[in-house]
Image (tube, rainbow, N blue to C red; front, side, top):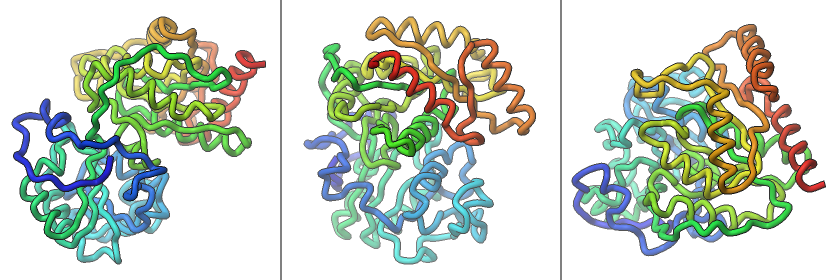
Length: 383
């Protein structure tokens, strides 16, 4: 997606945001875009004032995986703290009150993903200041920057580039095409949203590369795209084209020995199941990692909807995935953020006994157990 500044009217509703003023070029490609997201090395992360931690996944992931490129977090309510104090990662990266306090930034990355993707006023003020200074603004919100006439006009004057990573022009349906024999596809699936699917696949990539395996993480959400510079924002692709967009993403990367495809949502989620299924059939995984948060019993944001058992999710994902390509759950990634170390160990033992699968918490333990499971599957399929 080549960065651009377009003047237009704000869309009437969130449903129209994904389609308003689509660019005439392909989405972000880290390898050939002159404004590759990976070229920014002095990033200021803007989250608005006092953004809740549960809305700050993008900020936390950027700090975790691109910490060397981050110079500050802009959050007036938490000024004077460090990233470590605020988020539990990031060491001494400072939290400041305004853009004026950031040392020589080259860009502003929007670090929140609030429900509905709309922009808080406090965040808008920081973005407007960045545009006035000619900084590039990178956003994963559904509320596109280029559809804001005030920001777009200011960007045209200052030379600021407004980059909406969710904006896309995918328009191919899936064709059930064959992938390269020998390319192992591993897909993270979950029992709900925001349980660690992206982190699990990124950590798997790291673990496999440490063993000199040619592995590649494929981003399917705005945060993953901002971390690695390219991917498919599946939750903003027209529903008919999700399968095809993901199929193309795999085909473009099938030269790698192992592909690790980030998951989205949940197959039973009342709001997002369509995205989950399109992604599942588009990437046609041979193996899946089942991700869940220990102790979560209701769907995020829908407390009246109960989450099913892990056994039920295992059966559903294997059955539905295998309609496209024979597939199996090969391991479980538990998010034990609300557990003590002792409780986490007991949780892993219990789930492993129930499902007969290796279980690990990549945040606490690293990915080695799941790396072993991936390599065992490769041995089974390709030896």
